[in-house]
Image (cartoon, rainbow, N blue to C red):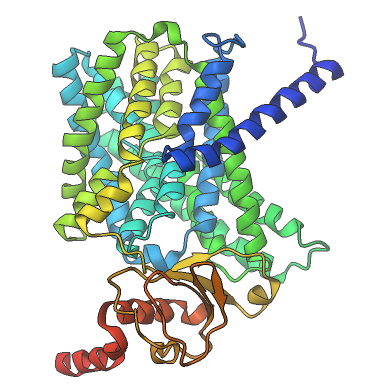
Length: 507
């Protein structure tokens, strides 16, 4: 019997969808004030709407959840690529790639062994749980870390990891869930994962480069078409990769990364549009996953299993995987410690848990419940404490220059960026005159925000701790401008002379 959907049902659907989306948007503000990740609010909304809540909406279609979850993750990865600055990621991309491959392998092995012996799970389910829990969440990483004043070496590594580690885990979870792993050895499985990741990345590069070339020469009749065209190019990479059995997630992220860092028309509008679509995807994804949960299945045993799994993952597997991955790009111990704590989990593990559900794997509902509870508990633990951990480890720098996305057509026309710099209490930029910054050609301090006053600075304007600076810089000189501001913050007004002296001594 065909399923009907009339206009009255559509009206009700639109009303409920609009109200839920508005509530989720307002929850972003509430969660920010409370210091809680917004994904928890979205999950709670889904649970309240579901069968265990007052609204009692029935939703148990694991295959639909699997498909919609993958679509939402693709959108989130596309937004992450479009809004990631390659210059910030470039210095740490080796570590990020190592974390997404070697680090994932170490994490899967450690979690599998730990849950097999501590929880008594069969090896197949233990390995499946390890594969599901190992990837970090792109949405959580992109939204949380970009709000922290962290150096490029940390944000670059974590963003690269979260953008690329979905691909190998999706393949591994799929192989195990379909039973294909039983007939494949370790080397064959590793070969399949390597092929999908490399082929997906190659297709992403090809379509990203070709798409950027086309967009620079396309004269579209409306500026609003450019964001749509760029997002469609990214999804073309996803679709082509999926058609040839390569990794669509790797393809869409790499293609979006190339498109987002190319000189395209209306770049700011494209970034803003992709961020809005990604927020909508996150809201829909988390609410849907909350609907899929059945609170009646959650008991003390499930909570205990989730806590044990999270402890193995957070205290043992994550630090060990970071340490092993750092072989390709050594970092200071405090940097590695922060990266270990910043392995944020979110929707990705829960979405991966829908794969065995859709395949009807025995024990898959138990795995889903464990993963769901673990994500909630450890997101509450790690997310709000990241700023404190960064301060304790000494990796946070309030004066770290950060880019601002503004709707400013003139900046787009002259290929310029707007940076925000907050002068920290112990920054040596305190007491320095604006003229003594000696910024690169074309760069200038446009505004100084001091308490509630807004100053248009002159060369003799003295900077003070707590000031917020808005710096306009040509895009080609952005890196040099950021380096210069960082040098002055660390060495004061003599930074230029000290830097030149150091170069002479090294020469």
